[in-house]
Image (cartoon, rainbow, N blue to C red):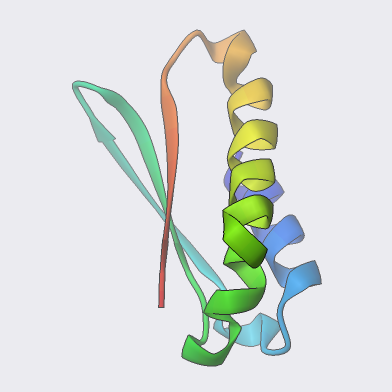
Length: 76
């Protein structure tokens, strides 16, 4: 799942070397924290959050097989 987020995010940004994904497990599920260059935050979020919503949809669809709740947080 982490690799999926990395591939998608690196394709969207101007600074792919600054893309990082940290994984945190808790009682609610798995949280993937996507960190990008401050100048690329708008590209990852998109107009009205459409790209971020699409990224979260892809990740949650891929997580259906694991039967766990998955969340993606985007930070700069």
